[in-house]
Length: 91
Image (cartoon, rainbow, N blue to C red; front, side, top):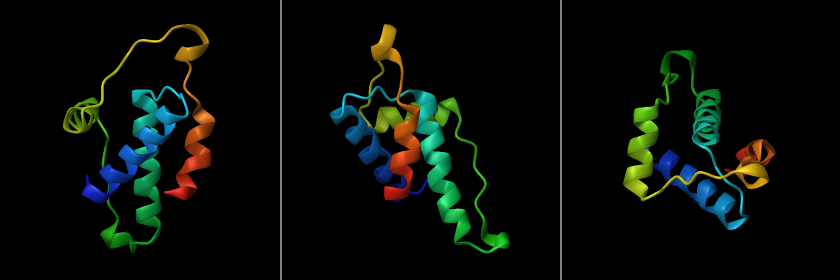
């Protein structure tokens, strides 16, 4: 992953945490796929980037940036899926 994408994803994660939104692993993967889709929209077909964001990628991303996971229960455990669709155009 390009360092600029990592920084954009990290910024988004930090903003979600500041708003007390729990960000799940799946939400991080979805956001990164969305960022990659936006990049691919600007590229010709022969230059498009095709990546799979695996659990290993996510582990390395979280390890690199010192992100930790906590288990939440009840209402606090539900991530705000709407946050992805609202914030993706801003990145």
